[in-house]
Image (cartoon, rainbow, N blue to C red):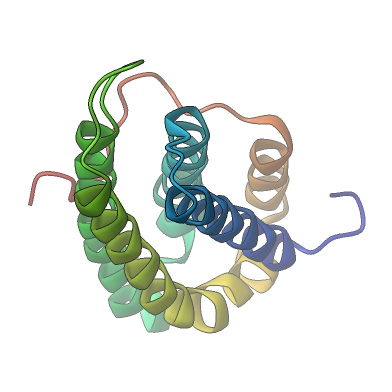
Length: 160
């Protein structure tokens, strides 16, 4: 990420997550359930939500960005609950899978992300490039490069 802006790095993560969901759905349509790949994609999405809620949103959530950030956090809750549903549907290793329900939940997640990203990318992400103090920008860049979400962390609106 050395020459990449923070907003571009965040958008790249969106693209990688979207590609993981598409790949899972493609395999599902071909009759294969790659639960491990789905779990990896969901873990990447949870980590992405963590970095937004813990590193990006707090310093930009005042003034003009306040309502947009509030909307993003509310959207994260719905996304998170949909991921929990996908986890349940994918089952454990070798567990039974209801493919139609799994497909429907995965498509719902994809639709939620499309709507969410339509606002987040043009409205919120530019603030990552212009609205952070240098140390905040460095912390966010470091986390994007190699940070790990703490075990057990859930987004603010996961239960609401």
